[in-house]
Length: 209
Image (cartoon, rainbow, N blue to C red):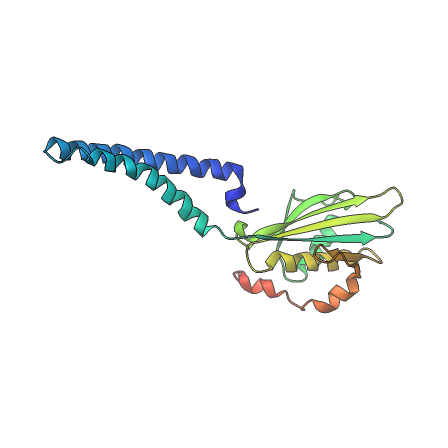
C-alpha cells in the first residue's frame, strides 16, 4: 500500500506537521508582539495565529501530492498434485532471470514451499517500488493453490517479476496453471513462459551495480 496509507507513517507525519505548525505559531506570536509593542495594529496577532494551521495543511498536502500511486495485481496458481520443494530453489530460478531477490522472512535451506508465506523484492529497488506477497495452501486432496500479489509504484516492475516467479514455480510443479485477477481465466504456465522476454524489462529501472 502507499506510504500515506501506513498508519504509523501517517501518525509520524501528523506529529511532524503539528510540531512545525506550533513552532511557526510561537515565532509568529513573538514577532507580532514586538510589532504591536512598537505601535503596529493588534490584528497582527490574528495573522500569526492563522499561519499555524496553514503551515500544517501545506505540509500534509505537499506530502500527499508527492506520494507515488500504487497498483496491485494478483495471480492465483493451481497445482493438481503438490510435491514439496525448497523455497530457496525457486528464488534461485527467479534470480537466473536477472533479479537479485530478497525474501522476508529470509529462507533457509530447510524452508519448504508447503503452506509458505513470504514477501519478495529486488534488493536493488527502492522500498517504495513495492514487493510481491506470496502464499501457498495445500489442500487435503493434494492440490495446491498459491497466491501472488504484486504491489507496484513503478510501471509494472513487480507485476513482471511475479510472472517470472510463476514460471519458476512451473519448473518445479508439473501441470501448473495460473490466472490473473482481472480475468480469472486459467492458463498453463507454458503460455506465460512464451510471452515473457528473455530478460525482464523492469530491470532497466534499476541501477546496474
